[in-house]
Image 1 (cartoon, protein in one colour):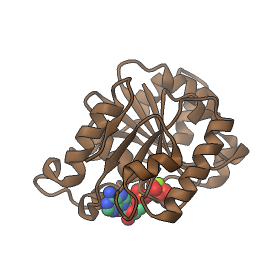
Image 2 (cartoon, rainbow, N blue to C red):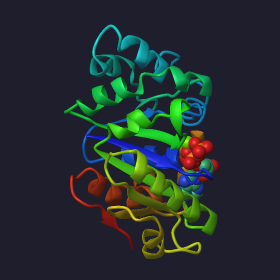
Image 3 (cartoon, protein in one colour):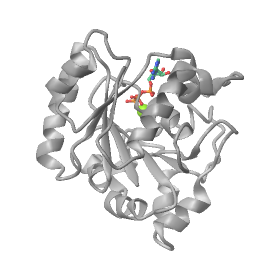
Image 4 (cartoon, rainbow, N blue to C red):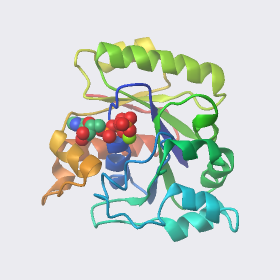
Length: 244
Ligand SMILES: Nc1ncnc2c1ncn2[C@@H]1O[C@H](COP(=O)(O)OP(=O)(O)OP(=O)(O)O)[C@@H](O)[C@H]1O
Ligand SMILES: [Mg+2]
């Protein structure tokens, strides 16, 4: 299964959510940093010490000589015991226009013995974006905060995706619900075929976004406990509904 995660404006926590969910995924999960604005995994989770070849541009190059699946297997790394398998992203936003997003999407969607979680970053329209990769996804997750600006921007993006994408209807993922809007209000504004949520947990978020040390009980933190529940429903084929 190929799952794409994308946001409107305001950096609600897409990269953090993708890594937290992949670490709690019920099957083998591979994270791909496919943010068209340039990747964050190498500098964040990897703290700048990521293996240079383990990145999306190299996947595009090697996929010309073999299948996307074979190339991906060679390139993904697990940077530490607590982290999921991952491929870092683009070095520059300029590279997004040259990426074979459609071919990568089709190749990734064909992988059967692992689920691929793509950090699609903030949605960018047109040739500088990754729309063709998002279109190939089996499930699309629209990540949002719960503030008015965040929900407004997400509602606008949901409309754009509905008109343009002819892909799956997005599932909403609310980060830090209730400030002030709760998932019921957010779903009423944004639509979506289901809604899930992750809590505000800056300490654990820092493990994924900045490569902070995980501590001894990462699995028991609020973010990872919720991530396990959300991962279980996103990994299943049906409608996702996990809210408190
Ligand atoms: N659930 C959370 N609880 C608390 N802080 C969080 C949470 N998720 C993310 N953050 C923090 O918010 C900041 C932005 O997170 P992140 O980089 O994941 O956002 P993003 O949506 O991927 O942003 P961008 O659009 O820049 O790629 C980081 O400092 C991260 O630690
Ligand atoms: Mg990000």
